[in-house]
Length: 125
Length: 164
Image 1 (cartoon, helix red, strand yellow):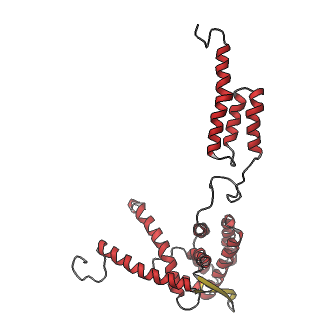
Image 2: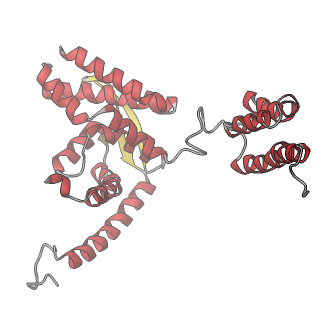
Image 3: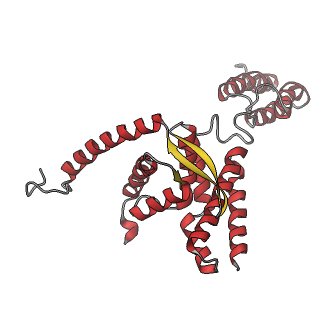
């Protein structure tokens, strides 16, 4: 009966995930430096956001191309040199903007869906 | 299958899927995934088959990873149905175009009606000519090389064509 779920619902989460994921990656990198593998771990630990870990690499590559992150290669004793990511000023700005937009968006949706976390009234308003 | 063979097979599949990406993207992706696998194995502290299988499962199918990469790059320029590199879509004349024109001109003489019709079919196979050009060509060819000879044929036939 799982196939009775309209595919529109599943598709809307694919799109949503894609839009949110890159900003979560920026947030995970944060103010420091992160190696791709660590970023993957953080996202996987968070639960729902990363379907297949390998898809992080195209995403990171796109963030590089868009100038939201810069990378540095460092030698590692655990094998090949590692690529470390840090945010650019542009990346920081995009992240801040998204945090604000996301909060507004989430609150609006919660209000309408009745899924707000802190129930002030019984009907979620 | 032992751990190394598993990894090699996976990387081979990734490289094969990634053949459709631009070469710099392909090289980057393969390097990064290799490094990921090496790091994951190191982090797990073990190199047995089960561990490696888990790592590769979590990485996901090469098709999915490459699809995500193609996705990130945005839609390809030009008509995706056109074979060959869409960026190098050439103008001008190739074998198909030349054959079409020959069929429609010389073919009209040597093989009336049929020659130009075949030429039209060939013309529509062209990847270089626009839809609009092909439509115009079709109208012109049908009018001159098909309709006129057929009308002419009826006019010459005994008792046919003109009112008696």
